[in-house]
Length: 80
Image 1 (cartoon, helix red, strand yellow):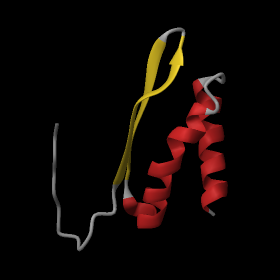
Image 2 (cartoon, one colour):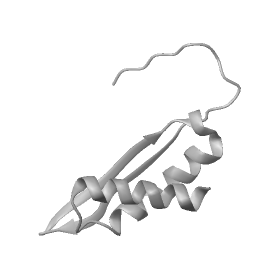
Image 3 (cartoon, helix red, strand yellow):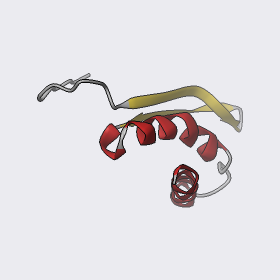
Image 4 (cartoon, helix red, strand yellow):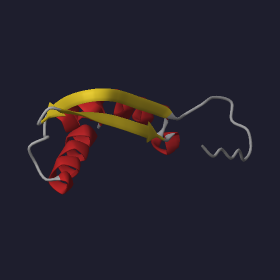
């Protein structure tokens, strides 16, 4: 792991999501891991961390490109 710190912030705006066994595909567990930075604001990062894995898991039969494009579009619409 690598860490770098530049400047100080009053509060942490980054969130993470870890779902080691989100779904099973052909007997194999597929996990979801993400780090969401707070550049869009703390609420946005928190919302993304809490909801993106669920949206991705609902689209596992799609190609990776359409899976993530669709999941991010739905996430944006739900947040906004």
